[in-house]
Amino acid sequence: MEDAEEEQRRRLKLEEALEIQSLRRIISAYLNYPDAADEDVRRYERSFRKLPPAHKALLSHYPLKFQRLRRCISLNSHFIFSMLQAFEPPLDMSQDIDLSEDQHPEYAQNDHLFREGIDSCSCESAPLRITCSVSNRHGCVESNNDSCRSSVLVHPNEATVTSSQQQWLDPSFQLNVPLVDVDKVRCIIRNIVRDWAVEGQKERDQCYKPILEELNLLFPNRSEESPPACLVPGAGLGRLALDISSLGFICQGNEFSYYMMICSSFILNHCQTVGEWTIYPWIHSNCNSLSDSDQLRPVTIPDIHPASAGITEGFSMCGGDFVEVYSDPGQKGSWDAVVTCFFIDTAHNIVEYIEVISNILKDGGVWINLGPLLYHFADTYGQDEMSIELSLEDVKRIALHYGFEFEKERTVETTYTTNPKSMMQNRYFAAFWTMRKKATAAQQQVP
Ligand code: SAH
Image (cartoon, rainbow, N blue to C red; front, side):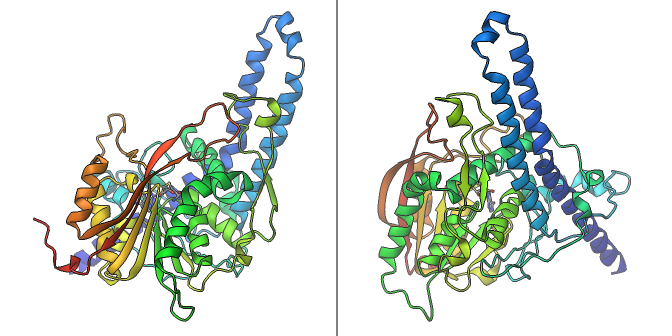
């Protein structure tokens, strides 16, 4: 008995250490942004210096461009640093952590457990209590090593973060992070444009507007006393969830990336005015640029003041892995609508996602989906990640199996975090559907 308790205590301690480690790595990636970006500029300068004098003379404006790039980097860094300062880590980040194998042999063995997250998380904890587990090594923003395990409630009407000592921002607590992590920070900057800038309006009109219109149509007489409940798994930076809340739904966004959560929490909780911040999202690519001024153009954020967006009471962001959080028996039949936008292809096992969505919907509830099937774990370069990559046809067949029936289906042409002024515009022909969970779904058995 005591052994079991001791084992449990050790496990919790290890988990906490892993959470701290993982969060430190993410914070370090944010903090490494200025150096990594400056290193790029130094590389451009080195190439410029190698030019023959006659060619250099033709590009005499380049030194000024480098200077301007550095100024943009420093303003982006100012935004990032302010965001981190507003963030209150849920754990004591100054703790000494020892994850060496002799201290924690189980770390080596059970790494996969932590990647998947072994604890399920509830959605009831205090505002901005984020904990983070997991440590793995994928390359994209959506990967599990960024994930947070328990919940975050974001209240746009309240300043929920109190000041802390923030020793964890001190350089001595920083880790050396691989450049791929800093790349994630750049991805986040592009996501900010998608969700929170006027420049992102076109993309939001392509992706979010059809969803909002559909919700409006499907729930015509929304009661103010008891509004319908809508869940948005993979909520990213929270704009879609906020817009759904403003439409008159009790909306919850679910998101497992700490990169995303730190940023959405800052915008939702701390931005005081429209256009409060100016960032330079497009400086990191010299490719497909029509002009230097396009590349160096500023973008102001946010385009709306979240706290004045007329949200419906009960708006929240819940941190954690979708499957873990919403497989909780208490979630069964809780939601009137589930909205997935560019989310279902993040699954290791998309069948599991569909099963959970069906399970948490009320009978007669709706699932609105918009997105491609660019399976995130399809190419993990020898890491042998579990990944079930179904065709759209199979996805739909599985959905029918879990008690859904189709109400609407069409294709939506859209971009995703694309620079609207770039010479390259990747387009998706995204599937957009509304499915309804049949009243009998609960009785259906899957062979
Ligand atoms: N819906 C947003 C973000 C789409 S990107 C938009 O349209 O802009 C997919 C998002 O899902 C990422 O933010 C990623 O971190 C998140 N995500 C991926 N797997 C997840 C999981 N298992 N649980 C919760 N969120 C997840």
